[in-house]
Length: 167
Image (cartoon, rainbow, N blue to C red; front, side, top):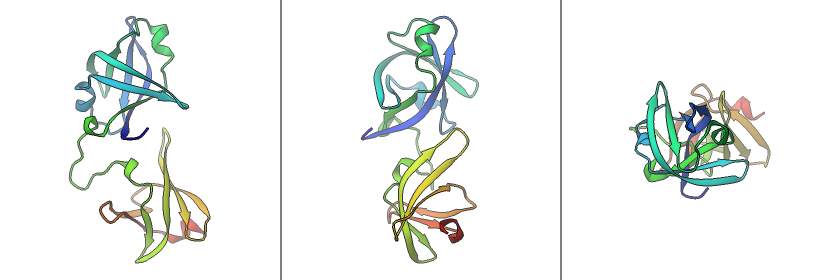
């Protein structure tokens, strides 16, 4: 979804009026509470909704979307991803970045290029980077501080700390 960022995931319906319980990917919810509209996406299908109301609910946000009036109607959107424009996404602090900006970055081990980030794969448990090595092999690596060091988006570089992961 060009120009958009995934900001959260619909967990399940909440209450009897059609609210959706949304988990923020960043853990920050202020940006979601300010939204006027969202795009929900799942398996290539997407739908745009105006937001009638929103409220904080623990670590999550409850969204009341226009046209969704019952828990049965809301249930259809369980596990759908919430997309917003980059401008409406959570603000980044110093040294923070959006993982959506990583594809296309060179992967370095030391000062030597070893590949390129092809994609970011987010699961409910962990984030992985799909790396295509310079010799054409693909690897799916856990995107953790243990395995990756400095990220420089201006230079479009990601530093790999452990080269054995590409063997």
